[in-house]
Image (tube, rainbow, N blue to C red; front, side, top):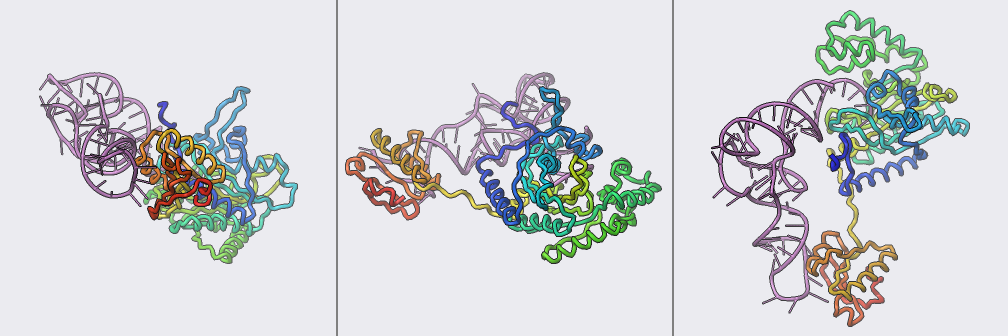
Length: 415
RNA sequence: GUGGGUAUAGUCAAGAGGUUAAGACGGCGGGUUGUGGCUCCGCUAUGCGUGGGUUCGAAUCCCACUAUCCACCCCA
């Protein structure tokens, strides 16, 4: 137990960490190009933030939160998602008083108490972007575009962008009533999970994997047919903007978002290469959320993207992430006097910004070379009695195997 | 929460009741005393997830537990 990470968590070891560094760097670069600025919020928040933000009825709030009382008897929750905390910070720091829109990105760990499976962890990591302050569908298109560009930049080729509109508080209830009226006569024919869904989230029934249920809902009323004029126009604008950007998409009228705060635009980037949890990036518009959290009525749009899932998809696509380069030089030494000289040389070279290593295991010269090879050393410097006596170093080029003697004071010119 | 699969060295992996648990990779060392990547040799699990049970005898059969993987649900 002591030597096991908790269920649903994973260590990112050095042989993987360089991949994380790679995508993190790329993501930050793309965000900079798009004018999104980084925001960092705490790992935990007041529980109520998520109850209000994500929604009391959602699975996340009802059964997946890491919630505990702190020593001051406050109810604290490890963040299960990134948007609510950003909205909280946006309100707290009165960012709405600054020129809009506000464009933010983040790179965070999130926590949800779920049963782990492929592409799903209890402690996972996600990128997110959010744009506040504009109803213009250019913002939605830009949000989608930044995800699209990042996914492409990562070399991922088989992801499909699906878009939908989930309507707004004006038109969604109309559709919901129509849908329930349509489904009610068939209630007993649905699978048991769909019977539950009938009460909690009837739109999900449209997406049920059971072929029987699929048949039952074939002619069900679709949200897209019930959009009010404003939502309909917004959806048309979104499609137009995506077309202008040359972003391919398919309309999937069954896309539902699991968090209560979404309005109008909903979208997912989906792959089938990493198992059942194929949503690599998902998001949408949330025009009521800022107000719900206690700020002034302010529209917003954004997405979250699972870093583990991105990495898995890259792997599945055979993307090769450049490995860290080898070291500039390895210093091999023979004897105590040489050790002192080697130590000093290594220190000097390191201060010059070179990556240099030497053996600390007492290996003989042969195995020091072996180590140098494994470390990917470009050059190996040899120091022994001969070199000490003649005031020079032997320097071997590990690629060409050529060895030359270099006066000690000139060593910096060849490394 | 429900269902299914799997658990043998650092890693991959043979083994399917019977003397000292294959092999490969990796690691460490060596091939005459100061030179790697190739090759050759040696070493590297008193123990087969944990706890019970069956048996003269179990890594191999049975039970429980735990871990892990996958799927449902849901989501990133």
